Amino acid sequence: MFPGLQGTYADERTGEIALDIYAPEAEGIDIEAVRTLAERRLSAPLRIDMVDSKLTLAGPKRADQ
Image (tube, rainbow, N blue to C red; front, side):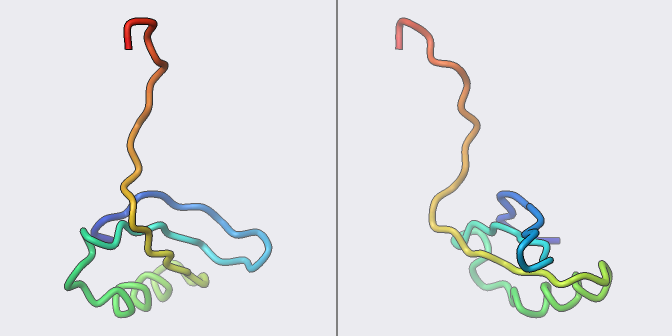
């Protein structure tokens, strides 16, 4: 439902569900419309944070790297 979704968390301070969206992958998408629809379905406030860098999985470094 969310193009470029990188991660989610609950902001305990505001009570919002926060989504980190990778901006380049969400380009051309009406994020506000998607947010409104998701808020209605979840019955909870939702915040979208646009990020410019893509998250990657990092494993332990090997000695030969």
